[in-house]
Image 1 (cartoon, rainbow, N blue to C red):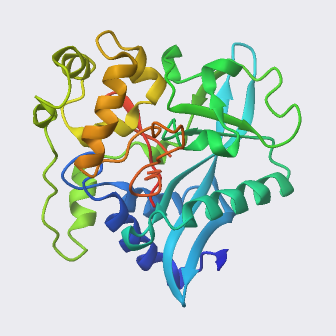
Image 2: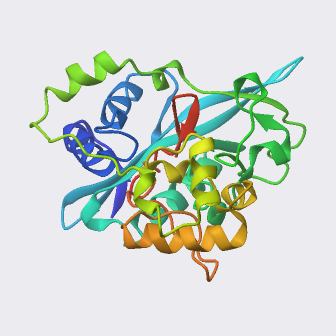
Length: 288
């Protein structure tokens, strides 16, 4: 069952978000604090703050906020979303897709014209998202990458929309604030990321060096990049891509597309992990 979040759901949503994102891009996560802060932001869209419930228990959540595309002479109102969260026990069950399809439909019904997101670049195209650069939209400063995606909710919703995508200031989170907020939850052991060195002998040296040269130090960071991006890196190609898929599957790391072409999607339904920035690189903020 999908319904709007109520005040009594809030702590549970934060707990589910913490479980879904823990260790995805570091030893802990900050998405539970992000959800907490977004609720108090004037940019939040209350009608699009939605939970997924199974047998009376909240196991998923997504929240939308208003954002802007800023061009040279004008700006445009758009939406963004995230974190999109599904509890680890229900990841792969379709709840993340259900939350997305429901809320995108609601967003269109509310009169919104477009949605942008930093998200898993091999997951969100199933909903119609395209690379931002393909429609003239970049990150602040003009940066482009496959993880920045856009969707027109209505015909012409992105026509003549060109410029830089700007989110609410709430998405900028201080690690000290995360530590203080996390201390209000039960203690949880830090996740230990898997170094890319474990792929030695499973993936050709040029492909492994390509990962390192693009700043990929741990396997869990792969969800920042699309299959197409990694395949295009010098030293990877289709052979290296397929070897990476096989080696990552053996390690339980979900990334990109399967060899059959089906979207694999992130282990924590987003946390899509959507996307957030980490060390200058956006990362998904969806979960499930």
